[in-house]
Image 1 (cartoon, rainbow, N blue to C red):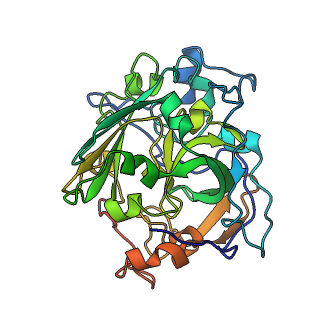
Image 2 (spheres, one colour):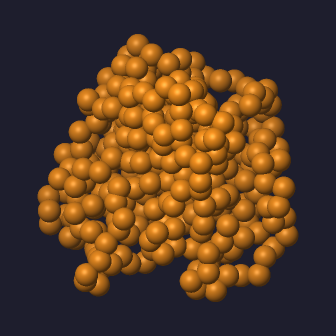
Image 3 (cartoon, helix red, strand yellow):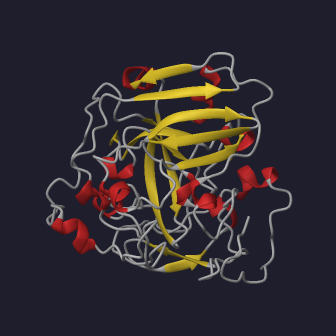
Length: 338
């Protein structure tokens, strides 16, 4: 799909970090109901200062900064400054390192090795391939400014660098029978303390998109942020960004992409969760434990009305003709939204 983007995507104030809403108030292991607290990880040697917050795990001066795509802008009407880089780097959701909540993931990533790296594209394709970092960085990069919205209600404005995911998928020459795309993240228990602490989760992390979602121009394969290579806490060395969906639909540190014919199970469907496969940002579909009508900027905690599809309705609304446009009855605990 090819589109010209105009500077009229609804924007909101920028964003920054602080710790607020937890995706889950607590976390249990498979065999024991042990509450995982930050103290558990600090006792294991996590950082307790800001040193290393912005450490770049990869140096690619030939790629970054990438040329800004000026057709995709944060529009007028609200503040257009970006979330401060330090803010976006200090509050993340990455359960492989810090399970059970969003927070200072960067404190637990020291042992995570992202270079060398390989990503495999396989399944229903005519040209299954495996790419290394050099292959990925040879693909022409661009920078895009996107709104980002977490299911926990916090939001931010971020400049991501990378390329449309379609460029990566097309290298594998998908077959017509490929209707869905499955993503698998790295599974390195020795390097990922959160994996060791939560054996009850169905590791490795895995997500999925419909083929039309994956091939949409807004969906990006991302290798950089703030004009520099991705930090480990952002999902280095390569992650996916789907700006109209909740953040967990944008898997981090991807090692494998599978083209499949049937809708794949995703991590949060296997592990009891309140949202299903689509997980579009929609204020009309409440979370069982909170409303999604309002979003909160990560830096200021200032609230604003959550726009349908995170403000990208004009570009993706046609993909979902049955998306609820009016408030739905609140879900009960245990019920799953679309």
